Length: 231
Image (tube, rainbow, N blue to C red; front, side, top):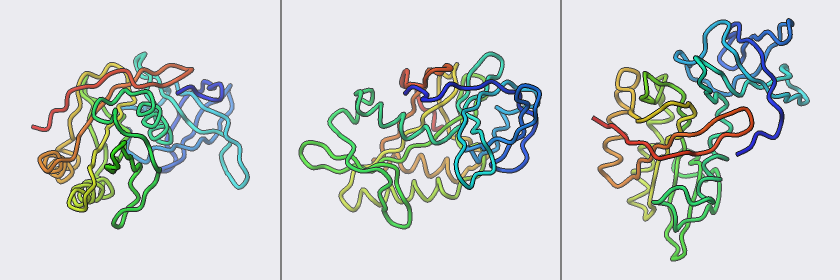
């Protein structure tokens, strides 16, 4: 998926709130919107190089969105709004072997008490609910999720399991938006309940998929499948 706008380099100074950061843009301090509500403790640090897009809209307090960070020469995409379009592009491009017979029927489908990211359907009418998770945390070459306790993520796993009883197929896809990653694991220390539910979901038929991406200043795209370590 190509970035529509040219990304502008800046220097990250500090996180003001959950969704707002302060950056140095050409010697001027600017506020930028952060679309990732996680802790980002293995990504953001003072004086880090980041890349912004101009996103001036009516009724917005910030002119810029922060899209990428570059830490130790490694790009990390920290705009969660790209996860679903990257997944959709991957489905259309046939990069998911398990989903090769499926097409996207609808995005943001309501199921239970949640909105699940995608409803897929194959040629014989089988339906599949898929939830997509954006992953930015890493220790070494292992990507970890979540980077903060996620009641929403636990609820999604429960509802995906329940959907199987309602005749759906189900899957959760972890897209790692950080280069240099070779494997994925749930972060037991951050959210042990999520980790337990993920193992249970897999045992009950929910497909658990993790992929690494290639990122540069022009585009982000799915590069390869990576192994999942559930312990």
